[in-house]
Length: 185
Image (cartoon, rainbow, N blue to C red; front, top):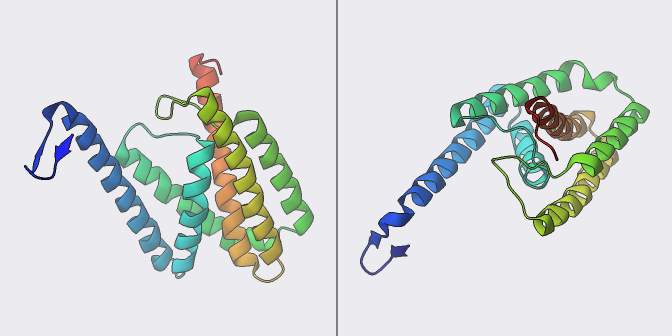
C-alpha cells in the first residue's frame, strides 16, 4: 500500500487509491451542495437534517445508484430540492394518521427489500443480515423522532419524514430496475 517513510505507494493499488479519492471528492461535493442549496432555500438546517437522516440510513438500506458521479450529484440535488418544495407546500396539510400509515408502509418496504444489493453494493449474507437489522432499528429511531417533533415543529418533522420517504422510493426504484433487467434477488 502506502509507505509513510518513503512517501511512495504501491502501483498495484493505484486504482484503489484513485477510486477512493473519487468517492471522497464526490461525497464532499454532494454534502457541500446540499448545505449550499439548503442555505439558498433559506434554511441551512434543512440541508443538515437531510444529510443526518439520509447518509446513515441509506448506508444500511441501499437503493438506486446513478451510473456516474455527476448523475449522482444531480439526482441528490434534485431529490433534496423536491423534498424542500414538498415540505413547504404540501407537508403542512398532512395529518399524523397519514404520517403513521406512510411510516408503516416504509417499514414493510425495508423489511422486504433492505438492504438492496446491486453492483455498487455487494454484501455477504452475514453483512446483509447486519445491515437489515441496522436499517430497521435506524428507520424506527428516525421515524419516532419525526413523530415526536411533529406537534412541535411540522417543518423539521416533514424534512425528516420526506428524506426517509425518498430512501424508501430509491429502494423501490432499484428493485423495479432490477426486475426489468431480469436480476433475481
